[in-house]
Length: 131
Image (cartoon, rainbow, N blue to C red):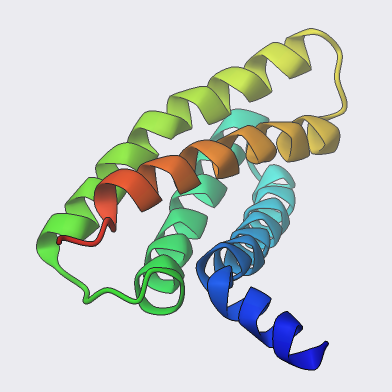
């Protein structure tokens, strides 16, 4: 039984690591959003929190999730893709807030969409293993 669990964890190590560090990234994003929201408007706070949490995500995805070396190419691809998702992030926030949604619930919902998109792009494009 223990052997099967260990094998299952080994088999899904990357996904488990991504979920763990992705959750930490979301937590950092939400904490930073909350802090900056006290001083700035919601979308400005969202943008700053997004940018800082993306840098954390790049470092953890490279080192702990996909176990690839830091390269200029994957850094630029990672950031380019994340800059693309900020439009989804800010757009989703704007729509949900315009509909009268709670800003923290909106932030969490939008982050779920972003996590899924980021995993797909990271796994199959940025950090794909070259065979």
